[in-house]
Image (cartoon, one colour):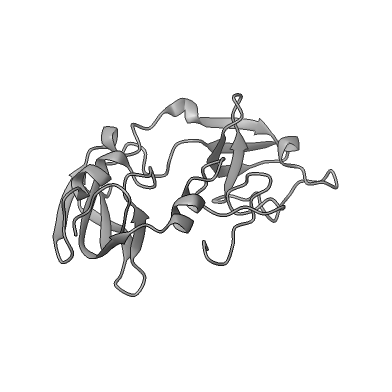
Length: 190
């Protein structure tokens, strides 16, 4: 079996990016005990990452670099925004300190209704500075790893991946992990 559309792939990987001194730094790792798992061709991974995986077999190793333009794009300075602190009030009309703090990732709605994740960079008395850029924006990504398993996707998995709001998880009646109203996730998907 080879990596192709609608195959569930498990792999180990290490992700490196260049540090300020130019030397590569390990940023992420998936092990044999906790592998990266994705359904190929379902937009769960970067398109260039999937293209590099096409045709691989169980046991194959990989070692490739995705340029920033093929990964998370270049860093856009306009992605750094100051917003009124009142935008982050909870249901009681108070600032939500439990969810909004420096380093937190918060869901934000775009003008066209999409949900994007933003990182909180600074909190002052009246403003919250967020960064809408992906943490790896502007970075070339160096992946090294090994394909552990390839199998056909099940109908249930495919249904969960293709939920209407596209978070890739099952939905219930609460707001959940993806920030979308109605999404709670389920034991099988988590």
